[in-house]
Image 1 (cartoon, rainbow, N blue to C red):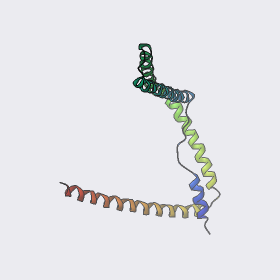
Image 2: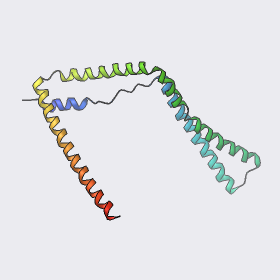
Image 3: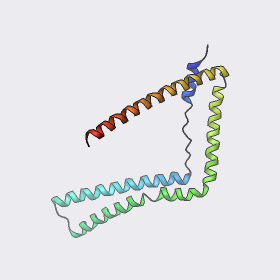
Image 4: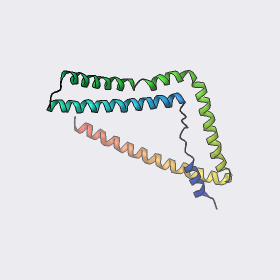
Length: 163
C-alpha cells in the first residue's frame, strides 16, 4: 500500500518560503526606525496633551514655545525614521552578489533536508502522490476559472444595467 498520507504530511512540512537573512546593518536600521517612531509618537502625544491643557488653561509664552518645539521635533524624528532603512538598502546593493550567494546556499541546504525526508519513500509512492497532487491542482484551477468567468459575466451584466 502506498504511504500517501505520510508523503503528503512530509510535503506539507516542506514549505517553500524563501529564507530571509538580515545583515547587522539592516537589523540596526530597522530598530532605529522603530525607536524613532516610538519617540515621535510619544512626543506627539505629549504635544497633544499640552494642547488640551492649553485650551482649558492658557499657557505662558515659554510653554507655548516649548509645545511647538515638541511637536516640530516629533515631526522631524518621524521624518528621520524614514531614512535608515532605504539608506542601508542602497548601501547593501553594492553587496548583492554576496547576499544572493548566501541566500542560494541557505535555500539549497533547506531543499536538501526536504529531499532527504522524501528519500525514505519509493519512486512509485512519490509518483503516485505526484499524480494525486496534480489532479487536485487541476481541479482547483478549474474551479477558480469557473468562478472568475462567472464573476466576470455578472460584472458585465451590472455594468450594462447601470449605463
